[in-house]
Image (cartoon, rainbow, N blue to C red):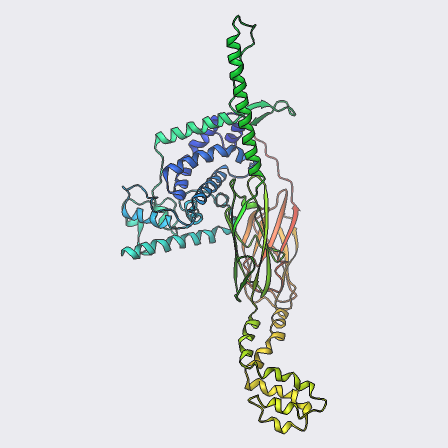
Length: 586
């Protein structure tokens, strides 16, 4: 095994030392093969996808900075290619029953796999990362294409889905349910990760390649890398090299004086001309295909709710979009804006979908989704949906029962000038018309009789809420605002939050702090905040070194109902002390 770091191996591949790609293959091929096989369920396809991943990875890794993990990026690319393969075959929701494991495995192991193949592919990939691969939290987030803060909910949902499928199979065959099995007492089972909360999925044995298959795939990857790269000096910067894709290079014939026979020269010339023509044509077709692919952005397959949908009143609505692209979708570029408010940080984002679950007020709503593929080509779509208003829905059926009497209320005010005899007969259809003969001398008092309808008829109470139902709640709601972000003398992040609304905050809410894209504080809880009050908080045990972008996000899960959610986030660029240079001994 090579002693070079992952980044050093990639740098060697960039300068043409393609053998370094073989060292990277030796380092991660076993785990990646197991990961791919868990997603696609077919050994042959897993081997082909593994070859595809390592062949594509040198160009994929060009934009990976030194601070990010090569291992996490490898798993990310493997997941993209596996989900794309399943999407092409229509197997994203579940795998076909033919994708079975080796028959020599025990019944329990095969039951575990049967439950796993019934899961959606994205959730199966989540379990394959969390419960089978020893990755860091940031590497897991990179592999799954989500923010690190979204990992717990994503893992919990995947485990719930697996246990549900396992229990369905167990109940149909009269076997113990998932929570009734103690795998530590089953011979032959072994945990792949030391997590007591892991599902039975972690007990699937490692699915490894044979040595023959591994050697064959390694040779194919290195051979493909040799055909795709050539080393030439960069014209703008002498001393550096540039890696460019080319077709196989034909060795030039040495120039000699004209031989005595003309036929060999003509033959060689014709062959070289044909080869050159074929190479030029092939290169043109490849470039045309790459250009066409690059000019086409990601495709959004489905949006929820549908465009133009009218939904019944509900405290929460799920807004979701499912998308794909041949080169893969970069989850870091996905942005979801609802009614002009960016809700990306409150959403669950992956390379194939984004989902937001939050409260919506009655009325129309506009959703805008922006995303890019791995080549940077953008796609932007928008759609609308309407959430029915609760008061309007209750008013519709109630007046229908008294449709005839209600129009008679209109002439009553118009009859006030003096034709009092006319309003009297019109009031007889009402059930409560009997008390009105006493009011006949005073026709002007008849409009006040509407007060008598409130206790005796149902329509009156339903008409009173509309003018008063909306203002009172909004008048007493709080409004959480981030007013400032700064650094104290110890280079710690200090921020100020304020309740600018007329209502008090009487229940706890969370605060999330991001430095660039990393969550540095996600468990800060504030229990209450009266109206007009503000708090000054400090991020403990974290110092800013150098210049970074700091983001403060209040009430991310919207535990507290506010009058305005659009001012819950503030972003500032702060400059801390310069990093201390370290001297390394050669």
